[in-house]
Length: 101
Image (cartoon, rainbow, N blue to C red):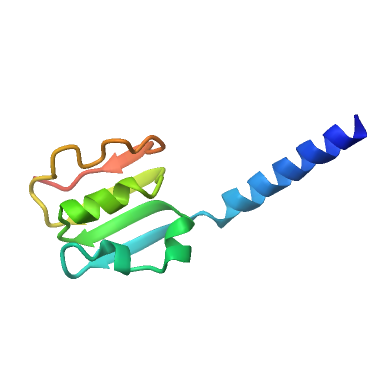
């Protein structure tokens, strides 16, 4: 029983530490298709909320789908039309702010 408690406590501590490391990132994309280069791989791993500016292409949206985001703010992008299935498979996405237009 003591061992089970230790394992559960350890898992809870790991989860709380990981949850605290998640961050919000605000990124300006100066050239379509380069979103993945705007932050390091370690920085991208910790992003849970993303606010974007600039113009995005299908490659950028494909990258967004890999991030496991909880929230995405697209209000600052210049795209008037989003790619088909732009956010398909974003299972953890709880909030999306779309661009005007």
